[in-house]
Image 1 (cartoon, rainbow, N blue to C red):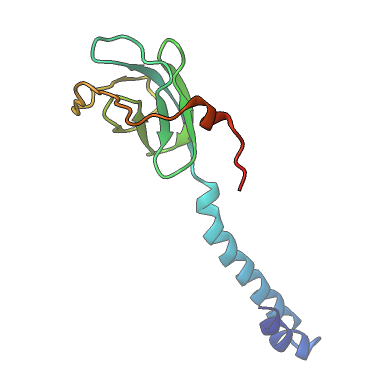
Image 2 (spheres, helix red, strand yellow):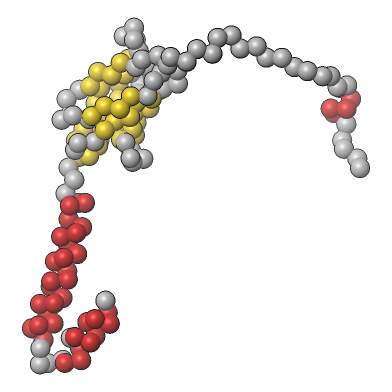
Length: 143
Protein backbone atom coordinates (compact mmCIF):
# COMPACT_ATOMS: atom_id res chain seq x y z
CA UNK A 1 0.00 0.00 0.00
CA UNK A 2 2.88 2.35 0.69
CA UNK A 3 4.23 1.71 -2.80
CA UNK A 4 0.86 2.79 -4.24
CA UNK A 5 0.95 6.07 -2.37
CA UNK A 6 4.60 6.75 -3.16
CA UNK A 7 3.99 6.34 -6.90
CA UNK A 8 0.72 8.25 -7.10
CA UNK A 9 1.11 10.96 -4.45
CA UNK A 10 4.71 11.72 -3.63
CA UNK A 11 6.09 11.44 -7.13
CA UNK A 12 4.02 14.44 -8.21
CA UNK A 13 4.17 16.43 -5.00
CA UNK A 14 2.60 19.81 -5.31
CA UNK A 15 0.77 19.32 -8.61
CA UNK A 16 -1.92 16.95 -7.44
CA UNK A 17 -1.99 17.24 -3.66
CA UNK A 18 -5.80 17.37 -3.52
CA UNK A 19 -6.05 14.14 -5.57
CA UNK A 20 -3.66 12.46 -3.16
CA UNK A 21 -5.75 13.57 -0.18
CA UNK A 22 -8.92 12.26 -1.82
CA UNK A 23 -7.30 8.87 -2.47
CA UNK A 24 -6.09 8.68 1.13
CA UNK A 25 -9.53 9.65 2.43
CA UNK A 26 -11.17 7.05 0.18
CA UNK A 27 -8.88 4.25 1.39
CA UNK A 28 -9.47 5.20 5.04
CA UNK A 29 -13.24 5.35 4.49
CA UNK A 30 -13.22 1.88 2.93
CA UNK A 31 -11.22 0.48 5.84
CA UNK A 32 -13.67 2.04 8.30
CA UNK A 33 -16.65 0.62 6.37
CA UNK A 34 -15.21 -2.88 6.66
CA UNK A 35 -14.41 -2.62 10.38
CA UNK A 36 -17.48 -0.71 11.63
CA UNK A 37 -19.96 -3.65 11.46
CA UNK A 38 -17.71 -5.54 13.85
CA UNK A 39 -17.85 -2.66 16.32
CA UNK A 40 -21.59 -2.21 15.85
CA UNK A 41 -22.64 -5.61 17.22
CA UNK A 42 -24.95 -4.95 20.11
CA UNK A 43 -24.65 -6.96 23.29
CA UNK A 44 -27.63 -8.14 25.27
CA UNK A 45 -27.71 -9.36 28.85
CA UNK A 46 -29.08 -12.91 29.09
CA UNK A 47 -30.05 -14.40 32.43
CA UNK A 48 -32.04 -17.39 33.55
CA UNK A 49 -32.15 -20.59 35.52
CA UNK A 50 -31.02 -24.11 34.65
CA UNK A 51 -33.03 -26.98 36.15
CA UNK A 52 -33.32 -30.74 35.69
CA UNK A 53 -36.45 -32.64 34.63
CA UNK A 54 -37.72 -32.59 38.25
CA UNK A 55 -37.41 -28.79 38.45
CA UNK A 56 -34.41 -28.93 40.77
CA UNK A 57 -31.62 -26.39 40.12
CA UNK A 58 -28.49 -27.64 38.34
CA UNK A 59 -25.39 -25.95 39.78
CA UNK A 60 -22.26 -26.00 37.61
CA UNK A 61 -23.99 -26.26 34.22
CA UNK A 62 -22.02 -24.69 31.38
CA UNK A 63 -23.74 -21.92 29.40
CA UNK A 64 -21.71 -20.70 26.40
CA UNK A 65 -22.24 -18.46 23.40
CA UNK A 66 -21.94 -20.74 20.36
CA UNK A 67 -18.81 -20.15 18.28
CA UNK A 68 -17.04 -18.07 20.92
CA UNK A 69 -15.16 -18.58 24.16
CA UNK A 70 -17.73 -16.44 26.00
CA UNK A 71 -19.50 -18.42 28.70
CA UNK A 72 -20.70 -18.76 32.28
CA UNK A 73 -21.45 -21.45 34.86
CA UNK A 74 -24.75 -21.73 36.73
CA UNK A 75 -24.69 -20.98 40.45
CA UNK A 76 -25.92 -23.15 43.34
CA UNK A 77 -29.53 -22.18 42.69
CA UNK A 78 -29.17 -22.74 38.92
CA UNK A 79 -29.10 -19.03 38.04
CA UNK A 80 -26.74 -17.62 35.41
CA UNK A 81 -26.05 -14.29 33.73
CA UNK A 82 -24.15 -13.70 30.50
CA UNK A 83 -23.58 -10.85 28.03
CA UNK A 84 -23.84 -12.09 24.42
CA UNK A 85 -24.15 -10.65 20.92
CA UNK A 86 -27.65 -9.95 19.65
CA UNK A 87 -29.06 -13.04 17.92
CA UNK A 88 -26.60 -15.40 19.61
CA UNK A 89 -27.24 -19.09 20.26
CA UNK A 90 -26.55 -20.50 23.73
CA UNK A 91 -25.08 -23.98 24.25
CA UNK A 92 -26.02 -25.50 27.61
CA UNK A 93 -24.30 -28.67 28.82
CA UNK A 94 -23.82 -30.67 31.99
CA UNK A 95 -22.47 -34.16 32.66
CA UNK A 96 -25.21 -36.79 32.41
CA UNK A 97 -27.57 -34.52 30.44
CA UNK A 98 -28.16 -33.87 26.75
CA UNK A 99 -26.45 -30.74 25.37
CA UNK A 100 -29.00 -28.13 24.26
CA UNK A 101 -28.76 -25.19 21.87
CA UNK A 102 -31.28 -22.39 22.31
CA UNK A 103 -31.54 -18.83 20.95
CA UNK A 104 -30.58 -16.12 23.44
CA UNK A 105 -33.76 -14.20 22.63
CA UNK A 106 -34.21 -10.55 23.48
CA UNK A 107 -32.86 -10.57 27.02
CA UNK A 108 -35.96 -11.95 28.79
CA UNK A 109 -35.12 -14.44 31.58
CA UNK A 110 -34.73 -18.01 30.32
CA UNK A 111 -35.92 -21.20 32.00
CA UNK A 112 -33.81 -24.10 30.74
CA UNK A 113 -34.74 -27.69 31.57
CA UNK A 114 -32.02 -30.26 30.98
CA UNK A 115 -33.00 -33.72 29.76
CA UNK A 116 -31.07 -36.75 31.09
CA UNK A 117 -28.76 -38.45 28.58
CA UNK A 118 -30.31 -41.58 27.11
CA UNK A 119 -27.14 -43.63 27.40
CA UNK A 120 -27.34 -46.23 30.12
CA UNK A 121 -24.04 -47.81 31.02
CA UNK A 122 -25.68 -50.24 33.44
CA UNK A 123 -23.43 -51.67 36.09
CA UNK A 124 -19.73 -51.01 35.89
CA UNK A 125 -17.48 -53.67 37.32
CA UNK A 126 -13.78 -53.05 37.87
CA UNK A 127 -11.63 -56.15 37.75
CA UNK A 128 -7.90 -56.31 38.48
CA UNK A 129 -5.74 -59.06 37.04
CA UNK A 130 -2.34 -60.27 38.18
CA UNK A 131 -0.31 -59.71 41.29
CA UNK A 132 3.08 -58.38 42.28
CA UNK A 133 5.05 -58.43 45.48
CA UNK A 134 5.05 -55.19 47.42
CA UNK A 135 8.83 -55.23 47.46
CA UNK A 136 8.98 -55.02 43.65
CA UNK A 137 6.72 -51.98 43.64
CA UNK A 138 8.84 -50.06 46.17
CA UNK A 139 12.37 -51.03 45.09
CA UNK A 140 14.28 -48.62 42.85
CA UNK A 141 15.08 -49.70 39.35
CA UNK A 142 18.74 -50.67 38.99
CA UNK A 143 19.90 -51.70 35.52
